[in-house]
View (cartoon, rainbow, N blue to C red):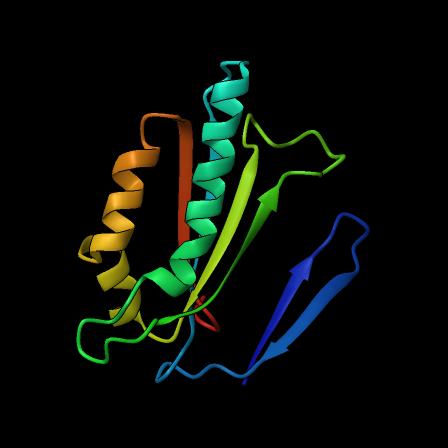
Length: 137
């Protein structure tokens, strides 16, 4: 068990307690995307298709050994934050994997994911990707 104390500006503290397990930890990938700002009906349709294809990776990415989908969950949507701190980012997606090996296969080898990256790259202006494993700080 790990206890984390983070001071705040009011001299109080935030305490979080979390069990850390390095074996079998879940892995998450957060993808933040900004599409090109071309305003036209056809480009909007292309953007909607790209978002739909991104979400379909959950069932479309198949593990090479089991021949079954290996992404545990994939959610995402258009930004709706009132904070104004998006820095141009319009969409966010969170992909959950069972293991680092599954994430690594997805990022470097999976042909379905690679085809998506190749096709969507022409309409994405900015992409930020952050991966993390639960409980590892």
